[in-house]
Length: 222
Image (cartoon, rainbow, N blue to C red; front, side):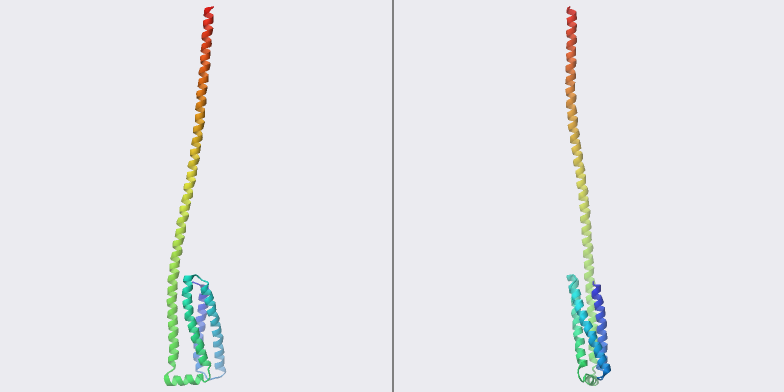
């Protein structure tokens, strides 16, 4: 599909999983140096994730329409996931977040929040898998279309080559016809010359015969 997009996508998924783990850890810590360090790491990771989302968007829009539609659908899922991670960061960074988290965990089993996050990850993974399957089907259809196109081009090339062969044969036949016509003209000229020579020879023979008869008559009469 797009190796560049796939690279961005793998990196984003790594960042998303890392931010989710760190957010869960930070929510259980009291305010202090360790929590502040985790929050700084989460912010840096979210900035990188934001940058990756923009890069994936640019890469997806530069591809063919059929592939672009699939990748943009993926991208909407990632944007939604990123917004949820940002909301989680705000919640963790807010004052008394640790106390509130502990009270919720004690009172109503705030583990449901983590379960919801896990469910969201599962839905995201499922959606990604379905999009990948759709992408593979589209790519397979595209490969079939390209193979059909290549076959059509090959057939057209064969037909063009056969046409050139027929044109070449026609040119040869035309040349043979010209040679035959030229031979006929030469034979006609030779035939006329032979006929003319026959008449000349007959005239000469006739003149000689008349001369001989005249000479004999002259000698016999004297």
